[in-house]
Image 1 (cartoon, rainbow, N blue to C red):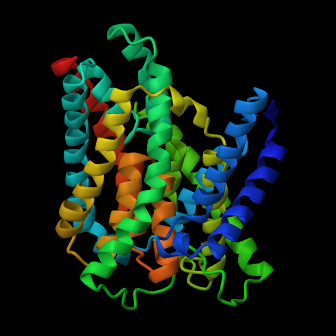
Image 2 (image 1 turned 45 degrees about the vertical axis):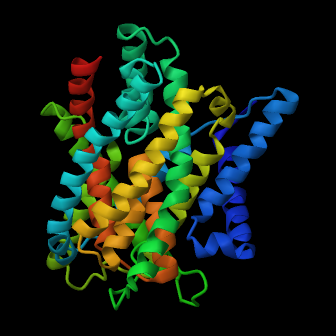
Length: 397
């Protein structure tokens, strides 16, 4: 049974409502900063899995709306990125980039080692490593034919998608508890870092009027248009980038240039209206992504693959707490970045943002984190991952 885009949107809104309701009732979820879309999305995907198990009906979704929501969200991130924040994030961006690329090697080497110990082919360790986890569903789908054709793994597509699903779930679950542990253990104070640029605090009574929302929608639409044209320009030069990456860049360019030429125009950077649009687009995107997961594919994971994935969860937890946090300065911003990075290394960039949004809603803003993590996750990681996968397959495959 396939639901169209309109039905998909209705269910996603209900799922997001369900996540907010459950989080409001269960203190454990709030204490560990589990994102509301993760709570609702997993509940929905479990429900659809039960429908499949008992009635044999597979529910699928038209995801046309989801891709646009992703573009809107990353555009709002760009529009929230003032040049002073970008300068502050320069050092952190470089450090996290070096650590993230290093971890891609570590993630794959861990997979190869355990695959070899359990008698599985080394290529399986790469497939269940950075291909499916750091790369996510898109990279798993892209690389599956190569594994099937060149490494005699006809089940590569099913394994890759199952592992990516596993990573997306645990990426959304781990981030909040890691940040909470780091903040509690090190007695960190968020300080006065400014307003929330992502993550709207629903409990606060703030005035958001029609004029503010219209300004935000106008600026977002212009930035997306610029981003699409940038993407076409890069394509002419032979550089292939996802639309949301160039829209992120367009937002950064516009928010740091147009206000200087139009000083009388009240630019929406840092406004509550922009934060609200950002939060809603992310929430709906993640709800759609999680509720559409086919959890029954996880039932097909063999023992060796399950051991591989559990080891990867332990590895990213230790790496984040003992390496990333300290390298980034062991402060509050570092703790928030760690919550995002754990979601990035296991799931996807939107999962990372959702983790950080949940943490900053509860503890306080960390604007630098929302610049550093998306840039590393949405741009540098994909490029580095492709090179590393090729190198490791040539070496161990």
